[in-house]
Length: 137
Image 1 (spheres, one colour):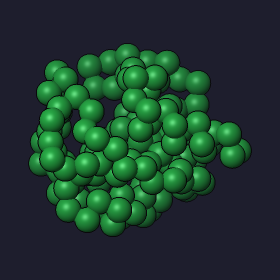
Image 2 (cartoon, rainbow, N blue to C red):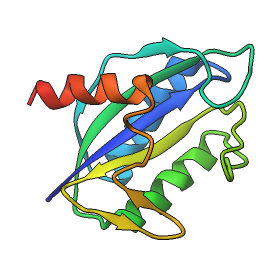
Image 3 (cartoon, rainbow, N blue to C red):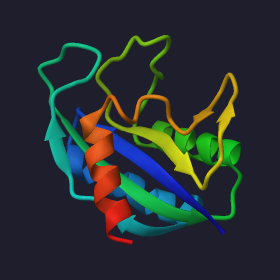
Image 4 (cartoon, rainbow, N blue to C red):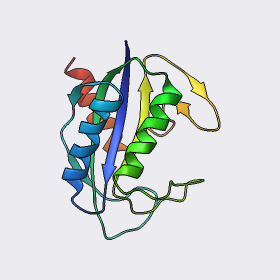
């Protein structure tokens, strides 16, 4: 069983409900959700928008491999209304965003996935909730 930390964000629609729906689907399709951080409201990062984000981090115990987790979380994003991914640092409003942050002690870099997530330290809306649940273990 591997430990997977996921970052979740939403700045369109019923943000808290969308994050809760994503967590529910993650629990059904990726693995057992063990911990969920507090929800925090933040300004958009990397782009301008009038829509603020709700962000959280969850810890999942999974038997899936990292790329399989990525593909399943992308399907969950699509199911919850996400139509396009950010590319080359160009971000935009979205109903849901799910990022793989950490997967055990795995270090990998591929065109699809980099672990650990390369921007954890730059993003307080990820780092602070991540620390919250890591310290509660």
